[in-house]
Image 1 (tube, rainbow, N blue to C red):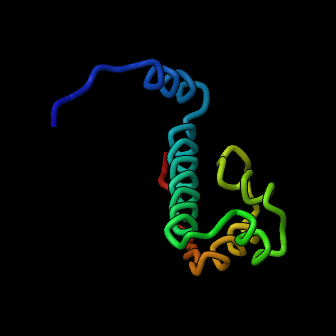
Image 2: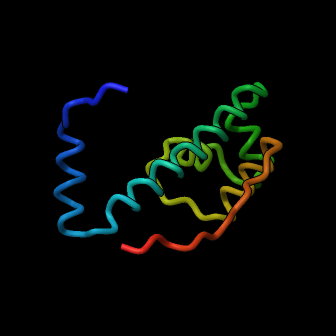
Image 3: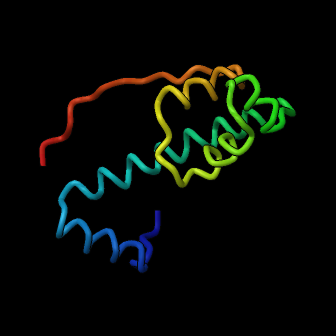
Length: 101
């Protein structure tokens, strides 16, 4: 695999890591969360469900579903579980030992 040149994002991560060594882990967690939200949204779309239908199944509103799908909010675990159930999915959680560092 060819190496790529560093860009502004690489520089930002390096700078933030100098100030907070846990920053790369925080970035990884944010990316994992974003991927989970994408998977749930794709499940909704693949089933032809509207946000309104999913919201009704969750006992919530369409605007809540829209905000979840935007991915720019820290969503409660219970809310994600209700969304997953509304689209016929289940979220599998695990706890792992933190890496030393």
